[in-house]
Length: 152
Image (cartoon, rainbow, N blue to C red; front, side):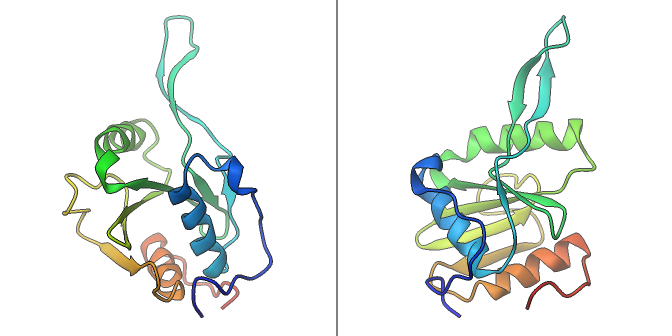
């Protein structure tokens, strides 16, 4: 299976994505045969004195089959994402968020805050853009502790 071999599933018009990296991630998730929802939830990170949300974080994708979120970015825009992921881990420690970082035709994936780019946590995964997306699915399942078979 290559990334061009998609199964019928969720479809979001390309213009709905914030950038082409989000579109590419959506295509990869399709190829993994994982159901996803695009930006369905905004988590409060900072509230004002009246209890209204001042700052929030809306991960790019929710993956209901593994009960986790997936945020994607370019390698050059990591600092803002890392700040939000650190706050997310502090405010909502029960929520699983994976970070996918695209650089040089490779998507580097880690669970949670990655630290400085290049370290990406202790359990990272690399998927070449032309690689087999089933390997990403296997990594996500291992990292969430899901042992059930999901539409192989």
